[in-house]
Length: 405
Image (cartoon, rainbow, N blue to C red; front, side, top):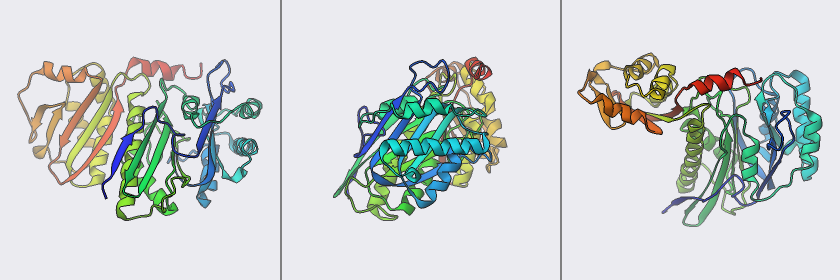
């Protein structure tokens, strides 16, 4: 079965058949003016739905609501707001999340139990429900509304992050779209930020959850901005089956194609998050090859990309690669110094644990690029992993020291 995957120009979460979205400026954050901050994603057909959520033991009210409702594995819509996380708000917060879902269901003519909720913003504040009640009634849905939804989800993000791809093979064609928000408080594990993925493929429920886990493991779980994990992290995948294919299940070429396409979408969105980290000027990419296990490779890559010392070195174009080695050594991965090779860009600085001759100015030029790649070969096995992050700048401190003021 010959397969093909193509990126759709200007694609978004509503590009797959049957999905619609819209957003409004509800002024959830006072003084936000005409900034979009409340949106709805809706499928005209009920969706098989999978989800992953924060591993923070403090979970927002929307996360708790979604986890409960997804036990039945289906959804028709998601309502999302920015400006207030509805986290650490107790029973009143749970009631607010349920009311958001009920209001959305009424506006759509859907069952309230089939509406999921996501919120992002300041922790410890109640939602301004009067503004949300009014705002939901002002949202107009369209099949091009994913672009507005992507903007409505943003907090400190500087750009919307969205994509859609088509995948095809003999007798099979489907589309996957997605939007994500995230710029700070990012160090997820089996969940991420706020991310909504849609597909018009028909997919068996168990395989959909399995595919989402695998896609998250190679994308969102390999991103770190600042080492913190939000109580609101939500990753949802809705499949409405409108492509008309036989349901994709584990095993076989159809499952392989679906997984490949989903991975591609998630990696694109994960890199977009890393590139737009709070105050960031560069995308960092760390690839670890030759690890003893996949877990070791992932652990090493994530530890290095999240190292504050390496992040500030890259920002300052300081060729202090010893910080990479130090982070690797504390990562917990199996490492043998005499087997270690290290490249900064295409410049070999360490071979079999021994520093190599190179021109420091060449490394400085690599660090001055918009994208800074680092490759390590542990020579301990055959496993590999790649992680993404960003540099650490003064602007990050300014953003987070004035977040609520």
